[in-house]
Image (cartoon, rainbow, N blue to C red; front, side, top):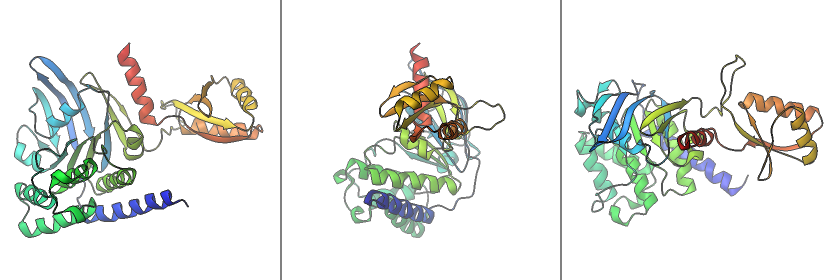
Amino acid sequence: MTSGDEDERAARENGAGRAAAVTGRTHGSGLVVRGVRRSFRGVVAVEEADLEVPAGSVTALVGPNGAGKTTLLLVLAGLLAPDRGTVLLDGVDLAADPVAARARTGWMPDALGSWESLTGRELLRAMADAHGVPRAQARRRVDELLALVHLEDLADARAQVLSRGQKQRLGLARALVHSPAVLLLDEPASGLDPRSRVELRDTLRRLAGEGVAVLVSSHVLSELDELADRAVLVAGGRTVDVVEDVGAGGRGADDGTARPTRPWRLRALDADLLRRALADRGLPVREGPGGLDVVLGGELAAARLLAELVADGVPVVAFAPATGLLEQAYLELDERSRR
């Protein structure tokens, strides 16, 4: 095992254990959004947004720049009032009872904001006070959260001296201080080193396992492929599609239902033999970096093709998705938006 593998395993174990110390919520009602619209001086940023984030799951919010993702997240966090539509946070209507709805919501923007004169400990205690967490409980919780995000050694340093990645980790702790039922994150991995990204991913999975409904927007689609259970695609201010079973890699059943398609990259010791075998099966082939790309309908189709190639004596040495499921969905969405 390489040192990189050992680091990732340690990060997973530490992140999972520490996350378990600050969760424990039972499954609630998650997040439900219906018909949300928001405009700015006549310019529509979000139009008829509909989405659901089930409790105990991670949903990715995916779309190009200017698609309305951040505006939508600000509405869901209660920081922007929608022109119309309904937002239910853990069963509470945001418009009817904004105080109760916000008490159930954790919000992590893409920047820490104007807290830089406070230390990390002071910031978290201030947020605990704002959410009405009892003082004795707040002290314990702040210590747990600082450990969770690996900032114990910098707990009493002013936020202004922290790096971008350290501020991101402090922002996550701030969002979790009151044990929210719904967690909203805008570009949470921005500025994080690889180890911290592994820890973030495992922390969010652990939170989902404890019943939190997690909605995360990010441009790092490879991270979301490993993190999310499902994805909501956004374009032109509208929610235009939902990709289910993201973490399952697009497995399909043998029941005739539609399967997600994406390119798979193959490499064999005899490239010409591989090319002929694929052509014999009527599969269009494209030269890819380090192999041949073919478009297949999910993992079952890929497994069958691999079995056939091996049975035919094709010396296959590599067979894997050329792109992640979310990356493929994003590229298809971007292509449609350009037409």
